[in-house]
Amino acid sequence: MPELPSTSLRARTAADLDVLFSMAADLDTWEERGPGAPAPLTRETFDARLARGAESEAPEATVTFVVDVNGTAVGAASLFNFDPFARHAEAGISLVPDARGCGVGTAAIAQLVRFGFVRRNLRRIHLQAIASNTGAVRAYEKAGFVVEGRQRQHAWVRGTYEDIVLMGILRSEQTQNT
Image 1 (cartoon, rainbow, N blue to C red):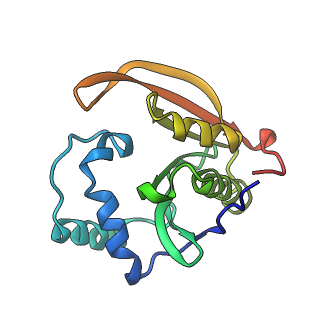
Image 2 (image 1 turned 90 degrees about the horizontal axis):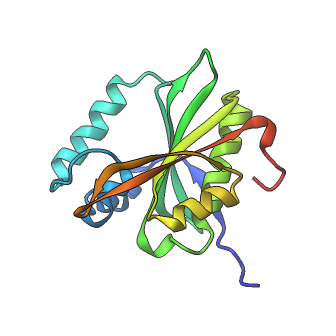
């Protein structure tokens, strides 16, 4: 069995910004990362968004980590849209192409889930994925998420309508492997 890369979550540093910008500006995966219409992203706009976010967000609004493999930034993972009353949040992850398909996403999402349940006292974490992104759906399932539903033809992705797969995990369902 091949050895899995050493994956961890950590705070963002200035050295990570080039990798994070390249992911944010990648038009090929734009629709897989958010609902907005694809458009070119300049470095100035990206840097301004980061600065605005750092100034305006309350600590409980979003928690974002850099996904690190053997000391190198390969992505970002976040918890956002927190509901403090019902104790749930949404999760999201984005990886550079070279980090996909080798267990990095599964390890990172499992660590994010553990952080949400143990450190933020969440009861439920949910996410959504484009149905054709089978690698992501598989990684989420390996981390313990279950399919809860589907929004049919909900997203416009590269010239066609696609389903959105809704997935979730409850703290009571979390296993020792996540």
